[in-house]
Length: 372
Ligand SMILES: *Cc1c(COP(=O)(O)O)cnc(C)c1O
Image (tube, rainbow, N blue to C red; front, side):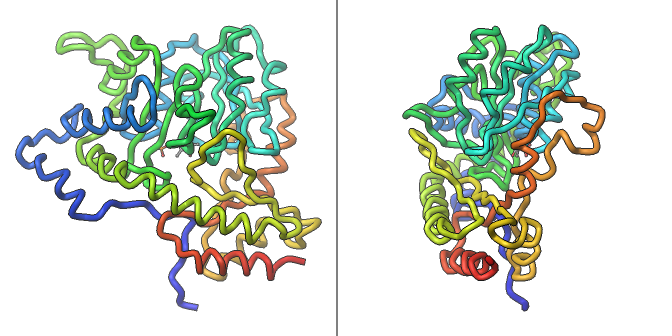
């Protein structure tokens, strides 16, 4: 079969002329990076769109998270309670700050951190909770907030998947002390590469601004060991263009998601995505869970079967970060029972703006015909 491959995602791009229009003035100003005009324009637009108090832009989501954690200046070796069911970046950002990740199990409804298991992991060394709004599913922000208040912990959200998501009418990045967003090409909203931190505390903002620019505070003063993680003007211009179209991008993804819901809901052994109450979703991923005992074949068989038919799915997020080679030395006490089960059963199906519903239909038929 020489059909073109269908990947799990495809980057949204604005009409080419729109982008050219946006970058044209860069040939007049020759100001290419270091918080130029496009950077500031994009930042203001994002703040409005996300309905947050403050936004700082970064070269990518990972550096945004890593420098955000650094900005809190936690004592070396402090413990951060987090989820292993995430992209490597989340755990890396903790460990690269010389802090200890303390893995907590996830719940089996929306795969976010299991809030009933956080408290038993808190010790005198715990400084923060770092949950992930995985697949754009909203964590139990109220319970997390309550625990954090009672134990005086910081809450830092990895909101890489949650661009534009709202909970109870409030932009999701308003919860916790700060939230990181990723604008990587594979995410719902992209700036080619890019990221941001949404935060409330202005002092934290000053640190973030300095940390992404080598720790420089002014021409003669460098007060912290910063990195280089600034967003450049071309990426900011891409953000300005893509932001104009984001609502229709999400609407198209919603159509795809609904199609999968309707076609797969009654397939025995396949669990589809559950709608969350009070949440305006962004449909950033379409995960299914495959129960081999009922469906007949397992997740890996389905992955291979679809691949033979030119459908490239992903086992996000397999393996758990706690099982990655680089984290073999990190001990943990929690059982991670749910995470260990989900990670073996989960498969994310193609979902993106331009994905034709006839292809979605054929993917569903393959899954239905393959069942017991
Ligand atoms: C994509 C992603 C990141 C990292 O973002 P980049 O912009 O790719 O650096 C971090 N956490 C999660 C959960 C992600 O999916």
